Image 1 (tube, one colour):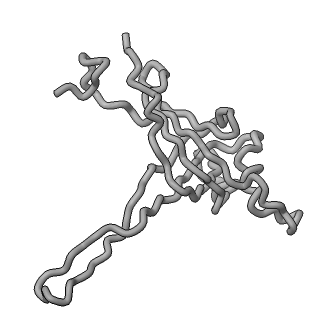
Image 2 (cartoon, helix red, strand yellow):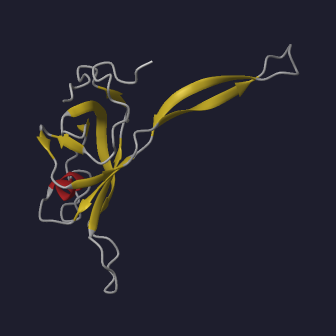
Length: 165
């Protein structure tokens, strides 16, 4: 069975190094790492009183894991501006208007064409790291990060397998 319906010649799965993030209708600059989209459900174990030798297991509510976004520190204010919508130290009466956003995560093929897209619903910033630990003996890029709580995600089924040359 072919793994790709349009590009039947293709054998290799998509790589994880070509992607884009979008919120507020525009792409976010410089994102270099996106945490995994994970969902899980806690099992509920129960036993019927008339059957003492066997327990049954059923699913409970779904839980969607937080997503972490990382990028090199620059002067682009997008990460900090969103984090401030939840709490701004300079304004303790920060309004919570628009602190939730839907984001789009696009996985691109090697040619830079969107191969899969996921919409993540009602995200909000639960953690913001403005700069990492600094070390004068290190040789690394300074990374800022956001941890996004979310209320679920789904694949955009309107994005179909692109034709590859």
